[in-house]
Amino acid sequence: MVTKIPDMAGAARAFIFLLEARDWDAFAALLHPEVVYELPQTRERIRGRDAYLRFNQEFPGDWHLDPTTVVADADHGVVRFDCRVEDESAEAIAFLDFDAEGCITRVTDFWPESYAPPAGREQLVERW
Image 1: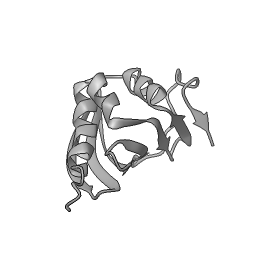
Image 2 (image 1 turned 90 degrees about the vertical axis):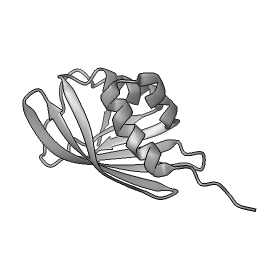
Image 3 (image 1 turned 30 degrees about the vertical axis):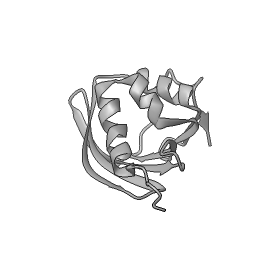
Image 4 (image 1 turned 135 degrees about the horizontal axis):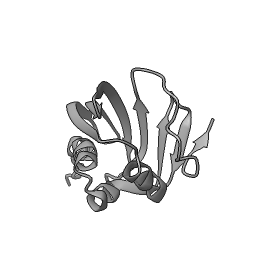
């Protein structure tokens, strides 16, 4: 008997492409209902699909994402991507954890520079 392993590299790639496309329904379908999103540089944590979806929908500025490297196995994925917000650009890395069904259960974003979190999302995040 052969067990089919979901295409986690495809899920990791879709994570960035669907964010860029603002395809919120398809993006939400990738996420486990209890997904945890962390930004170590701002010490923010968001719990749950609905809050994480809203966080992205309301993120300020005209932002764009372009994946440059995607690596994944059955449990974890890493996406290196270019991010542009207005006239500023940066490179970032997202680490993803998957459950057995291929849903994303955890996202940890690392950005090259420390920064203060934008105002207006305090109701969505907890700080540590």
